[in-house]
Length: 143
Image (cartoon, rainbow, N blue to C red; front, side, top):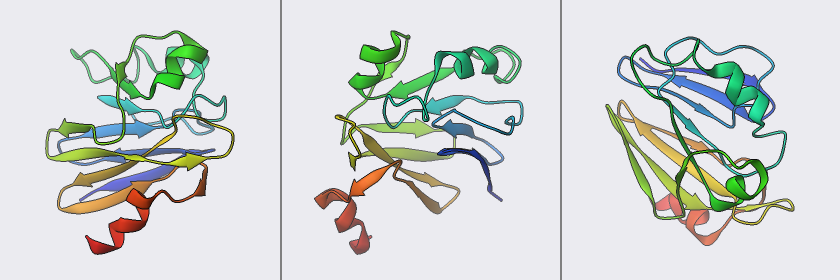
């Protein structure tokens, strides 16, 4: 079973038996403990802030693990944080699934991405502040 929690703004938390991820960690409600990975769509302050990242560590990270953070290059320009750089076509393995990074066109945000999370044989699409779907997002109808 997958649990998807809306935590405020564009933040969602996805929890399965084997995975626990957060997308765009600017939250109004606190996430559950045990987070393994964070995915950031773009650098705007309603999607990522240094303060929210600091609040998550170490209390909310899976015990004994280092938090993995993924995001496009615009994140580093604004926040100067340690993270794994991703781009459209990147794929990140989960314990029981995969995160595909897709091109996205967001309001006033260059380098914005969307995430297609395939977990426990389910698909979840997070498109951030999509102003217009990219060709790649439009082609998901075929899947």
